[in-house]
Length: 350
Image (cartoon, rainbow, N blue to C red; front, side):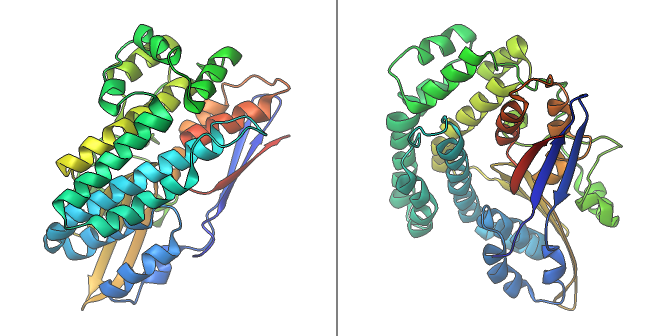
């Protein structure tokens, strides 16, 4: 596994925000000159967080329609990986310093390996979905995922919060007690569908995979974008804007959907003609590949972090709303964790 970089956010007292992203080695360049099989073997070792998503995107980009027979298994692996990544963010961040972890780590880390073992067995795959649903019901939501998805307004959400306690509920209640519900709320600009032919052309510009825009605009991708039409998320955005609480609840909504999506065999992989597109936990991942005589001639990877942490993107816009108060670094860190970069970050008050 190689270093995937680091983001340094400098917060000025005058409201200025400077974002410096060092994404480390250009992984895509390491894939040029290799055969497709070598690329698929190498990617999980290069990416520590979403290795299965990268494999799924690469397979679709390199093999096109021939990859369709693997799309179901790829999607199940990505769904398991997405659940793990959402739960790890809750495990590591949804607690005050010194508090015990919100969730049990071993159960989370077994999600991906368990699904990998289950692939190809209908009952075993269903059992993995049921195991995740039971874990969410017992340790995260204090009710079944389907029941949580039935929460559609502020009143029902508050009723859920006041029910049997869980560490997750305690953390959300703490956010509300601090008055941080609207923290970082800004005008939403969600990433739309990008026509594949035009998208592939954009990769002819090397800057696109580093500092992406579409028709001159940076966009947001991820859980809030994907869950922006769920009634509870709509209600929270109408009340508090696209702030911290809406972002956290959107993560829970997406988590609650995953067991049923596993059972339905929902597809998270698309693309063609040299493109592989996968919906990862952090947003839309895109691989663009050009081959010559069975060898990779050019390879580009556009990760969701490049959209969300664009110099004029959602993270910067959200951070610019924060007042220069003594707890500025804590507020900024909470926002960055909610937007969720795929690399480490550091907040500096300057």
